Image 1 (cartoon, rainbow, N blue to C red):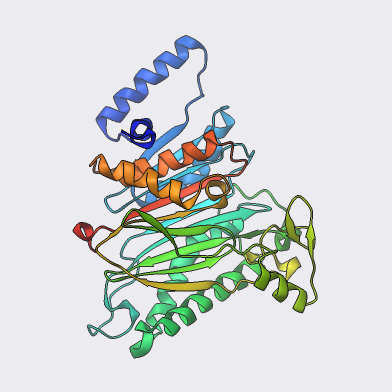
Image 2: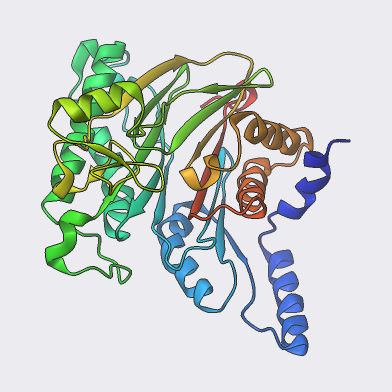
Length: 360
């Protein structure tokens, strides 16, 4: 038995009456030990938990623990943890069947059911990431619906995603902030706030990924990782050429940074760094196969310390255990692995079941 298989038990997520009983028992033990407030995970189901994840994490963080939230669903699981950062600036978006089918079967990209998943890694403040969580799936659904007959072509997917990201970026630059008590920046500093965005639309036969920034999407297929996005780092040769062609500079200050400030070359928001920092996503369209096991979306808090191969190995170990909530177990275990490897950033992970036995 591998180490990953042994460790899977530490990421088990329990819900319902059993979870409440365990929580009461743990609370009693903490009171007796004088460490009340040191809890780490809150488990729940559905989109409601995802929408409240940021607020819950910040509240738990104030209690002195490495607070985290786990989301459990049939087809997916997600986990977010503030880690060693003072504030939680990541946001996760989970929307099954987010796009209504077209009126006529086979017409438009919305003809078949689509699920939407996204990870948004904010910087400067959390409000751009939270705005992406609230709005991005709506914008993608609108642009998908506008695709008409040719929308199932790869080029049309690229156009729909580029328009969605452009609209999201315009809202962020205009200073549109999420209705949240977490925003801590002053209104005149909104142009110094931004977020990465990696989103996936999962159809019955394909996975469409759009990425802007250094979050990442990895497909686990036949036991091996297939990276579906490329990190937008300022020293990536083509990105460096684009930045310098626009009149900007990449300065090495604790790593490559645009104008010595931002450690990524594409993002939503960051108005003060345009046009050097772009909001145009790179889009991949991948046909699903019988060997597909899962899709992992995560912020760089995971990928900075965990390789694609290691992430797939952890997910497969949880899958082999045969538990219904294996996606949530894998997401939680990956965040714990990143913490154990001393990731210094917020960590958010989404794991989506792609097995043919769970086709949409």
